Image 1 (tube, rainbow, N blue to C red):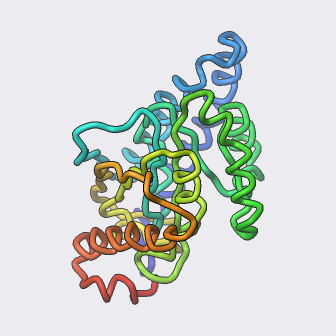
Image 2 (image 1 turned 30 degrees about the vertical axis):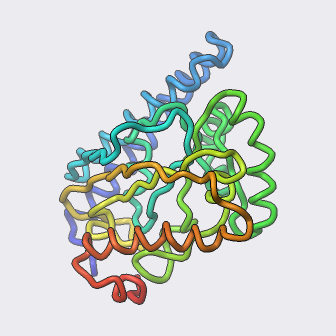
Amino acid sequence: MKPTPEQVIRTVFSSVVFFLLLLIVTPVVIILLLVSLGKLTNFIVENIAPLLAYPVFYILGITFSIENHADSLPEQAVYISNHSSTLDLFCILALGLPRIRFIAKWELQYNPLFFILGRLTGQVFIKRQDSKKAVQTLQNAYSRVKRKRLSIFAAPEGSRKHAGIIGEFKKGPFRTAMDLGYPLVPIYFEGNQLLSEGGSLFTKKGSCTAHIYPPIPTDSWTLENLEEQIASVRSRYISWAARDMNLSKEEVSDTKN
């Protein structure tokens, strides 16, 4: 669908504001990390990252909310979410999850601000096209994640541009949860794709909600049943997407972006 002039203006303005905020935040983050000898990393990720997201939501005319369906969240976990919209990045930042580190695509480092902030705060960058290399990169981060009692956030679809409302899930985040012995916490972003489809940079006004669901234990996961476990989790996302998009589960599986 062709964007309206208002949507183009809002999108361009929000992009400019976002990168200006990055320019302002980057030296502040560097100073805080130097002064604290790196001890304020979690504070930065949990509190400064949301400050980058909410001005963007305001400019785009979007109301963002969080609905927690879990009685409590584990101290350490692997969080996952659906990924089918440009808005997902800002929703992830706005969550402000405790002690979180993000698994991000390698190409984000081509932006020098993302490179500096990502490296300074210990984010994990992977090459999605090379699954073996991606798994190896994740495994190399295990000792640091456990030692610092961190959680991981990943989008198993890998890219917002994929076939179907819910794309195929990559094994990386699930293998990470199994290897670390962490529970998996699913998050579903409701409304994002209705406001901004995966292949589009433009956004409509509206509301989106991050649904945080109860953790899924991974104690019984093995290499032998991993694909079955992934399919089970993806089935939940298909159900949530069907409700969100007012489609049948079959339509969600077959619909192309």
